[in-house]
Amino acid sequence: MGQPVTVIQDSSKRSGVVRFSTNRVLSGMAHESYTSVPDPLAVRPVDELARQLFATGDVERVHVNGNVITVELARGDGAGLRELIEDLFTYYRPGVTVPTLADFTTDDAVDAEAPEA
Image (cartoon, rainbow, N blue to C red):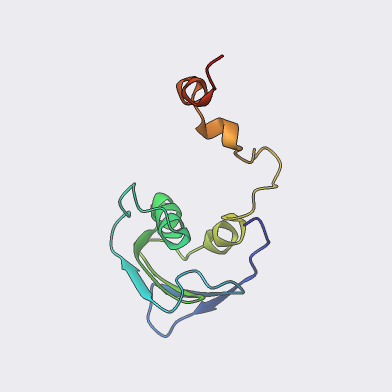
């Protein structure tokens, strides 16, 4: 990834609910619903989105269907959530280092793959 995500924020008729529409599909055709932080082993983009939204402390529930993110707020008015979603998958921001294969390779793994002389 690394492409900018465009996000449009809409209010809902229900108080405490904010809806975001993106120019990227995040959950495919599935409905994904979160009432708490996803398991650390869940590594799909939609899981990371929910994890980051819950980390703000302002979110009680997250529902994602395709490119629509519906957030039930625990407190506040949702300020800053749009920017969080826009920047979530942008890796070329100042101060952000893109991981390389070497970051995930240990010396032991490299030594084990080296041919014997």
